[in-house]
Length: 386
Image (tube, rainbow, N blue to C red; front, side):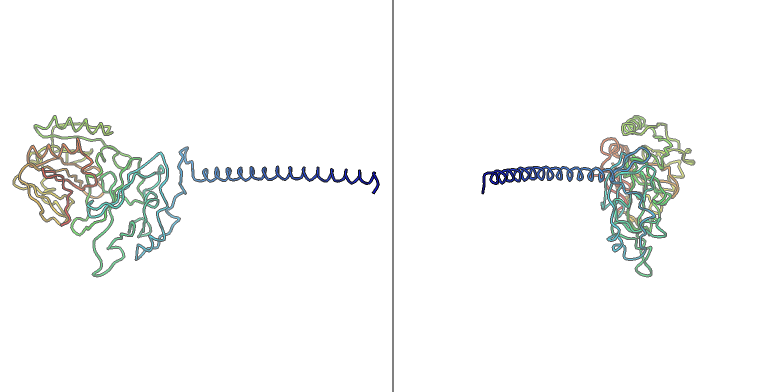
């Protein structure tokens, strides 16, 4: 091999090595670039996913909202409800600037099932709130709640000896709703309370106290007629305290005035009657009628000869008090009436003051109570179950 050939081979070898090194560097650069591209793709995908979970409606952002459910999910009607509940699970709560308190109980509030402050889409119907947070079975074309979390009506799809008067009922801010939940449009901070109970004695219970300070704060359906506290003699200062307490809780319009039973003939506002039962009922045919009908109209106490009788849901007397016993109870003229009368009363001054004390200082103790009897022994949710 001559000198020229050797030089040529060395030159070609150098060129080959140089090209190989460049190729490796380029390959390294290509791999690094590929990682960067994948990271960018992941980041872009995550951003799209996050954007997909957020929906803007009328300039309001809702996170996790997947659109209305009602009308899209067709619930199979019939038994057993729990099979349908397994198929159609709650779709999940949403993040929203608006919220309602959704409460589910059974047996007149004695057993708690569900309670949560949940997201609300402005102007949606209440059934949407139900679908997102509970396992629901509907009936009668979708507007009637037949079962919640597998606990179903014993009336709708049952016949013969199996049929019982056990059903779901709901109240908005303590007022029995005159429309179905598929029609009602909740307002922010409403309390929507469902209870499953026996209605063989009381077909309807028009008003309950366990959402206090509702209905005085929110009203019903976005309408609030205002609140009037009517007091009997010797309770004016107590009425002033109750007014101040309600205002502190966000109630905007509160008046106080001496008791005048004649205005109860045409209810235009929310009334809270404060005083001893005998002073409130003496000249009031309305209160006398409520006392006589009691369990038939969802009023689970009875006053007779300076004694207080607390009742179970069938109207049976469970306990009797002859002193220092107070009552907080609500009444409305029937289903469709959205202006209840509240009674803060008792058989004596001590009883009235004990009842008032609960509203002023410990209102959480009557949460999810249909009515309350207050004595030195404590607070009882009425009606009793047995």
